[in-house]
Amino acid sequence: MKHIFCSLVVVCSTLTIVYFMKWTEVDFHTGLVYATNLTTQYESVQQNISNETHSSFDHVELQSLNGGTSEGPKLILQWNFKNAPKEEKINCGDCTCLITTDKLAYNISSAVVVYSNKIIQELRHKGKDEDSLPTYRSNNQVWIFLNLESPTSLKHSLQSHSMFSKVSSKILNQLDFRFNWTWGYQRNSDIWGPYGYFNGTHAKYQNITIDTSDDQNTILNINFAANKSKLVLWAVSNCASWSRREMYVKKLKEYIPVDIYGACGELRCKKNSQCENDFYKPYKFYLAFENSICKDYITEKLWRCLVVWKVIPVVFGCDDYKTLLPDRSYIDVSTFSGPHKLAEYLKHLDLDDHKYNKYFQWRTQPSAPQLATKSLWPFETPRCQICKKLNTKFEEQIISFSETFNSSKYCQNLKVHYVS
Image 1 (tube, helix red, strand yellow):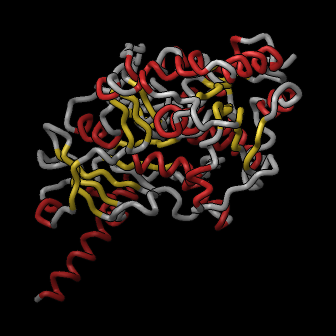
Image 2 (tube, helix red, strand yellow; image 1 turned 135 degrees about the vertical axis):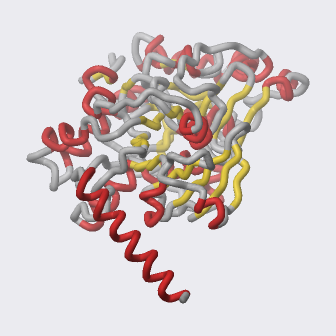
């Protein structure tokens, strides 16, 4: 009897797949993006879920699902999250959702999250696009495109890939109107998941959070310049960026010493070594220079300085720092006429501990940046944002891929950036 039941399940599943393929089949076998830092980006996604209460779910809960139409918990399929737990249940206040990476649960999933960076990684390794994306979609499903790359890098990745060099425009057109929601660092994303964030009283990077009220009695008595004998640090692996940041650093080095770690410099740290935990400690400033100058594009390098390292970040990137970061917590390259003026200012701070420490007083002075997002609350994890949206009435939408990731609209294409 057990064998008969199993056979019926297999047959029914097969018929269901055939039915959906017959009436709703769409060919999504196309490549997406290439990530310049896959490991860091994947860690950012994983760390963003650290505040959720989660556990494995059972088959009784699965039986209550019906392709996202039931009143039971919603099932979210993480399509290509390679190292994520296979089954989880997350509690997000007034709603609960089930999370899975099991593609066999595709037909009963309310939402499918497609992680663009993992897809392109598979394409590069396999040299083909088989199984990169589902080949059909249920009418009840929400498709979510997860991307942490800048529009400039996204466009470049498609054009530079040998498979796509001649058809990149065609692929971009094919991706249009395929997804319903976006999950990304942009504040206009349907699901907001930046590398780090500050809401006026708390700063968060990965699983570390700073509460300004907790620091008020201690920060003012700390000399953050103590035991820092070196001036400027830069860790970088992309030596030919779209922002031309390397040109700025080359000029800056004419006026002050800059220690460069990684593929673009002479200094190295072995992966998972003690060096990775200590190499930044002797430095007063870190060059948090982005590879693209795009709206809202602030990556892990800056948040790591603010929350973990306690090093002043020197920023080179978007025009949104004032609305995303604590006041007087960073030094913006764009406020100086050129590298020589920046060098003079850094040397000035190096000689004055009192002025240097002013860049850490934000930890005791709450502020309120204008975080205009579609998310209900900035500190709500992305997966809980998805869960709540699935459990709330929402307007159906199909996003335009070419418009959402339009590099001409959201990025600056500069030949030279603040170099004199």
